[in-house]
Length: 498
Image (tube, one colour):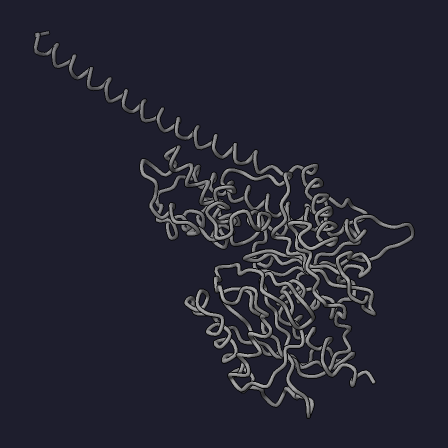
């Protein structure tokens, strides 16, 4: 063999070896990245752990905070607001009543014709209206004028099927799903805005007075006879059709709970005890916090960068506004530290709240053999294409970890309420039935979350007690509930009963 040939062979050999080394290096780099990505996921999974013992600690902490919040104003992170609702609907209510349900970027107006004991809800109509974004951060007058104008339009379309009793003023139940300090059944001061609203001149004002003034400016003759939180409305809507309903939980964009408390078990209540002996308490449970909540660095970062740092900690791990964002943050960490999606971090992945919970829910509930929905959502929402099956499985698993933690912690909160009411055990010779009315888009549409919540609650309660507790979907409870509460707290009640 000539020198040249030997030289070429050596060079070729070196080239082949170098190429092989590059391939090996790439593989090692890839597997190193994969190992790092798996580490991030495993660490996250561990920190999100909700073993049954931890859930019991969360439930006990919830009960302790409930007692503290009922004892004194500011005694707990749980506001335990007195709703002034002590007449829950009985089913005997009659007449035409309106409701206005303001809880987010949309509001609903509805009217309900009630026919009394045997007829129930004879007729109902509703309309949904979206709020222009500029009004969510504008002035109080601008927002309430817009709402009152839409309400006036809706009243003007009242058909022959709806009959107002002659000589009576129209009455409205006003569902207002923001923290309010109620001062009576039909008045309450806004404590703070949430859910993207920020109108400074409404804070500290009576929201019923603001709405009433706006209705007067529109020439609309209508009286607000009940101001209710959406959770209280859901409880009322549930009670109208089922006498065993004693609590309500909303799991939607945000989360909250309300329940029926014995009036004499509220130390901070200084008024006369109501005839019914009961009082609905609006817990504002989204603000619950406890050292037992399994929080991760992603939760702490989300909280620090939110509109309300240090507030609504429980809500930030269980509700629809935040679940998808937690998934995004974990994926972003994997992209940055483990090059999970390749050498560059996909730009869309860096956008806060780009991954909404409905998208996460669709990925988590993907039953296709090749996780096609996961692939499509990544492509459409995050502009990440060419994902491997292995990667899609990891993303599916992260969705599962976040949803499972949220659902199990929700179940623990419900157990806390049941404990406070003494309904977490069966009394000797007593088989009382306890119904919890549930509403909200997260609970309604995210089936994996819902199943996990119900299974976890059964696991916490045990078989015998589980049989006495029913979780019931109360669709649109809050709107109907407000109209029913307008009826059960009507200014004409005395004349109807006499």
